[in-house]
Length: 285
Image 1 (cartoon, rainbow, N blue to C red):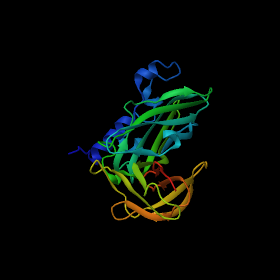
Image 2 (cartoon, rainbow, N blue to C red):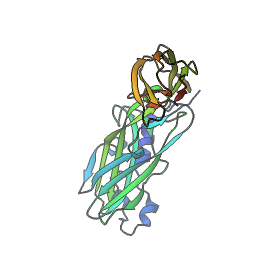
Image 3 (tube, rainbow, N blue to C red):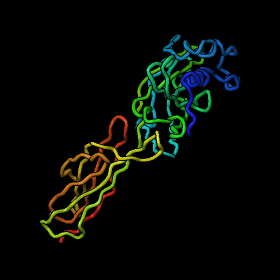
Image 4 (cartoon, rainbow, N blue to C red):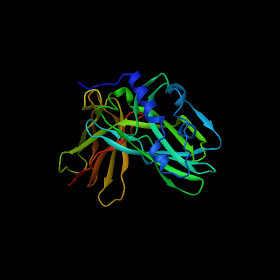
């Protein structure tokens, strides 16, 4: 049985991971203040206040990018490692930037999931004298950080930035990101070969990761497109749209007209990734 962190413990971990500017890093930075309590907006506050939206001075967060702008897709066993980048600006320059993802209704009282970096500071690259982009690495793990299906869907992105003069900006939800259950899709067209004008049966199955059981299971009553590409053509076209049955299975019939590839395509949902099956070539006699 998996170990599931309590909300209280999780909130505490959020506070500890997000609310520190490392003294060692600051000591190596000649532009940093010696007094880290003044430099950081996070160090001398209670956890509840520290993670709320807050700002001092003219530090501005101008952009946050999660996983290169793509959904975070997680299966049943493999960890998904991804990067969150925070771009910020301050007339004095940027000292640090930080981010993590959290799931729930309120960062102070309603957190039921979180993905936080293993370090308490970002890795920053200077853009110019006033701007830097700081990155952190996060891990989506079906054995821990995405422990159940309730965590599929919209997550909040916490972002913070600190200027070299001690100014700062923090946002408990700078933007949203989508963490989705991985999906799988198969296609089989038969009989092979088939006589022109005869019936072709195209079967398949749509499944998705179940984070509660660590297995893949049928994704039921979902719209899936049947697509065809004539031999020698460059792209697929949609022939019809059908729905998966109560077990996630797919089945439909078409008339054989020409040699070509058949496949199913699923557009995805707010909780489940899009997927396109491997195509199945059918020889028409």
